[in-house]
Length: 226
Ligand code: ADP
Ligand code: ADP
Image 1 (tube, rainbow, N blue to C red):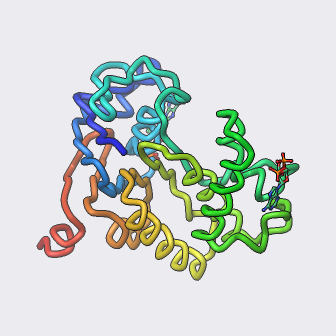
Image 2: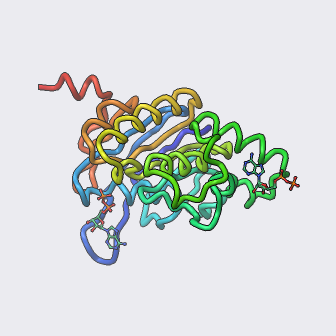
């Protein structure tokens, strides 16, 4: 686990107005932080800079006390869950979850132990032999989460993970994500434009607007605001 500190982070694409404009934010070890705001406010860009998928124009990204600006994504030990799941269609559920461990050349018995554990947590044990095409949307999302939790990452990053699901499933997965995060106690950054997710999931909510932080507060503080 690790804290995430952003210091005066700026991101410019070309010559335009900065997509992220001097953002400083401290996320504590084990904290669940929500990034919320209208489309285009810079949420995804910020998340992608934490993971290392986007270069930082200026400022410092510090994870677990180490400046990571120049570290490749694979050297940051973070797990990201994408909106579109990004599952491998030709691989079974088992191998999709196992994938990050295979990349690290984890021994087979360790892989089996960890995949089984993740599958139990996410109630996927009956579906391990299936291919993604034969799963429901909610099950696919769970496989994507299984792949994120199978490795001992320092933090989880979610980019609108539930936006492709119907309302009922969204509610169910919301509960599961909250439960999972509490159980694992892992530092989490969760991007959404959904008010319900923003107000129910996190310890704190960071409201972004036009690349700037407008407010950082607990859901209760936001709710009780006039
Ligand atoms: P959000 O996730 O809040 O919808 P983004 O981080 O995707 O916002 O985008 C922030 C701003 O940066 C927007 O104005 C968007 O058009 C711009 N932007 C995002 N990605 C790129 C890119 N690859 N090239 C140029 N501009 C981009
Ligand atoms: P070996 O130790 O001979 O390599 P393993 O038992 O580790 O064999 O697994 C071989 C393959 O079988 C794995 O790569 C995986 O695809 C599949 N596999 C292993 N255990 C399970 C399981 N519980 N459910 C589904 N597939 C599994």
